[in-house]
Length: 478
Image (tube, rainbow, N blue to C red; front, side, top):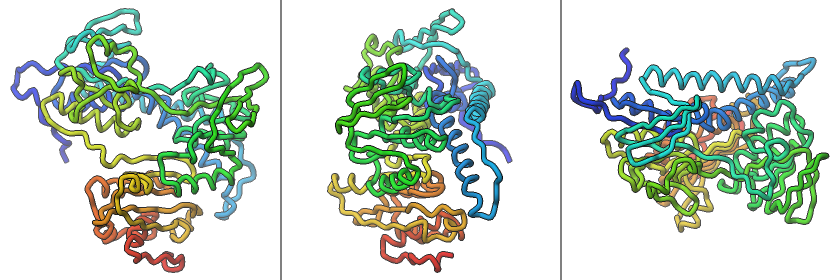
């Protein structure tokens, strides 16, 4: 079977190829580069660190690699429930980090191979805009050069937010970047921020033996998700003795040789060995020279683009964490491919209607579309349907019964939102993401035959429950 053939948009043989320069080799940049090359462009990527960006090197991939090790540990400790007996379970944090590094290194080489096989030129250095056609590069080898191209894509991503009051030093007060390389977990840690990063790394270090306290200023952890979702995860954290303080601010961090003192808005003072900052990320554009070209940004410093992902300066595009869309690798990747197509003459609009949101804790959390609170705020009449995993045969088989699937539909039965808390939630969400994207109804999707016994049956039952037709009985789902 032949592989997919892409139309060469240089069109005429012998015609000079369009030149595209991309600053940033993360998910947005490398996906754009490969797509543009397949469409016939001459592509150069300028990357200051390693290709793959935050996601591959100090974000999604390494975090999930650590969490996979933690999951194996938990499975080992619970093996007796399945009739399997271990005499001894030993954790070696250094080997966990080594495995993570090996995985990351292999995937970085994979992207470099894709660049080579698709004719993408990679320059290691820092790129700076000179005008709408020119990028000046300060190479890591000490040299410099100017790249003149027809179109330019900005994809430099984001960096962790580190307010001065927290006294970030990368040693005792760290971000996720340093946390991913700790070969000796601290005895105690305060995680400032109960979002995705805080919850994932907080649970990981807890399972490595660290005493964890998560401090979140919002009323709930995972503040952007449904309240019922946060409660499910909070229940598990309590089981694991992870302390969670919500509606609480950190007012002061005092770093000393013997430890760290953290003062809270509640009046409490906590003493810990280490502090992890996970309060969000900010667009990283300070090296791009945006002001000199008059490229428009909003109050948060994010680059403003139109529906085609082009900035107000013709021929310059921006994607990913640089613009006002969710800071997620899969969003950047999609925007990158769309921008590449548009730079080469297409008029493809970036659609952000159904963006999957995933948290790789245990249990996993995944959601798409609107939450109940958002539906209420928009004045949308809605109904919900839900189904608990504990009532599902497959969940009982694998010993993971906590959580549920929840579906939100509008008055026309169109699925406008969904959330899953439970085993393999992040993989199960794809079906519901497609439903929100395509505007499917609960009735139509509920009529699809789901395989048995599987976890996906929980989605089917939740869809049926929208119309109060779910058979919510354990004995009938075995």
